[in-house]
Length: 115
Image 1 (cartoon, rainbow, N blue to C red):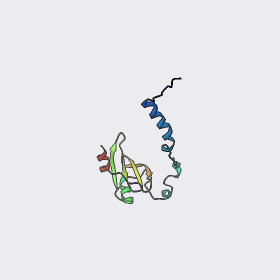
Image 2: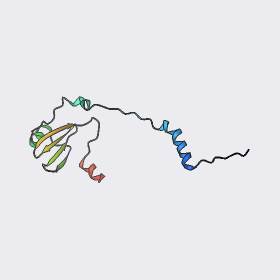
Image 3: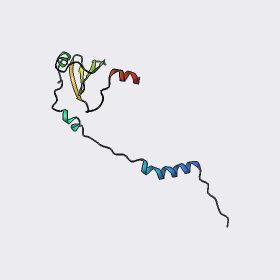
Image 4: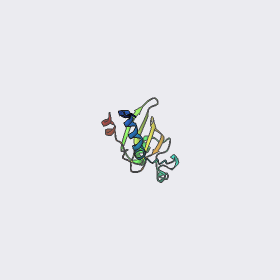
C-alpha cells in the first residue's frame, strides 16, 4: 500500500499557528466608567458657568494653561486649565468640561509637533 505524504502549504501552517497561539495572545480587559461618574471627585469644584464673560473667567480662575483660537461661525474658542476646559462662543462661556485626573494637558506646542 502506497503512503501519501502531506506537505502543508505556508498558508496552512500560518493558519494552524494562529489557531494555536491566538487564545493566549488575545487577552484584554475592558473597563467602562459611566459618563456620570467620570471626574466625580471634581463635581463640587468651582468652575466657570454658562454665560460668564472671558474677562470674568480670567479674573476668577487666572490665565489658562493654554488656549485654542476661535474657529467656525459662530466662532468657538477654548481655554485650557489644569482641571477643566472652557468653551466660548464669541466672549461668553457656553460649556465647561472637567478633565480626567493625572492626564497631561496638551499644549499648542504638542499639537503643532504632531502636524
